[in-house]
Image 1 (cartoon, helix red, strand yellow):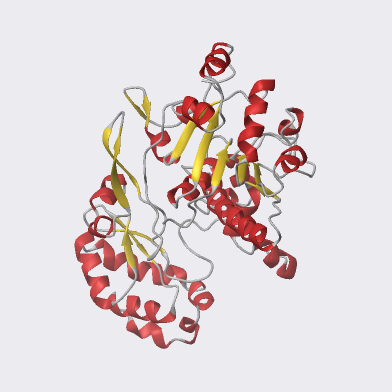
Image 2 (spheres, helix red, strand yellow):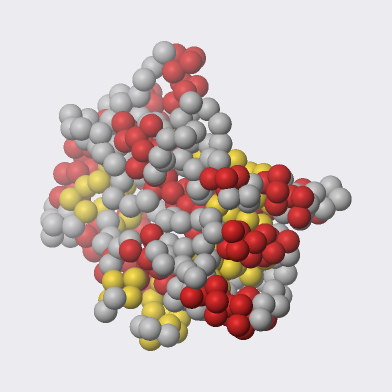
Length: 397
């Protein structure tokens, strides 16, 4: 039995943060019903690469989710949603604040039907405050959080990530919030609650204690490229065969091993070498020692020498490297699952391993409306003729 078996989730969210949260919960046994507009579908279907018209990202982000096409702002669509919510444990949505309320689907209405419902509301800026009504996307949160300001070369412009960083951090955090709310419900006579989750707050936490440093010391941190203000040497270094490797010396013992390996054990006895901040003050010298040694050797030689010395190093991988890496393969961080459109499909495995209640990818992302008939007739008791009428009227798909 998987840990979330028996938990039903209505995923009415779009794009990435909410769907990723529901993907994680579905991977561990939750029955997730993916609700999309019957004609437009989730915009996530149009994100990223496609093969023969089949969206590849969709296959992963919507795995373990049954699919129903439902127009929530149509009266009969909202009625169907309320009936689904009456038997659900969690609703996940990411509409602008006030949208569900206008459709008669706000928390007060849903809790009157199902007092135990946990409602996760994902927005850019939260349900209240001066920015609440603004459009919110991960890119904007990555800018406002301070991430872009700290990312990039010291003499270059701020840089955004090349992927959905804020959304992904938010989705992972949201899955934890949902589980906390379910735990609270089980402890408090079955009462649900509303979770106000913004894209901004989780990535602000990930960026680090900048506000505390500013409040206490008046320091505004700036970009340092691949260097760190907390320890040195820490950087990307190019090998003789044109590859790149990452070196980190977050612990004192590792720093000593690295400098011994690259032929400069004399610096270990310097008073400043005994702390990460002290080493940062001599970063140019330390970087030159490490960079010079690595530049004379191939990636394979560098990796072997660092491993034998017990020092921390990692190659800079592209996707083809990840797929062929022996550790990734041995630990099944990637797995192949059957797909009705694409056949054997390689994707990320469940995000963590549990010894007694492991997760499972039961099926990949479904076609739009693939499970509408089964849910309406088999679970809500709709007559097939009514289902046909609703489909003709564009309320469902």
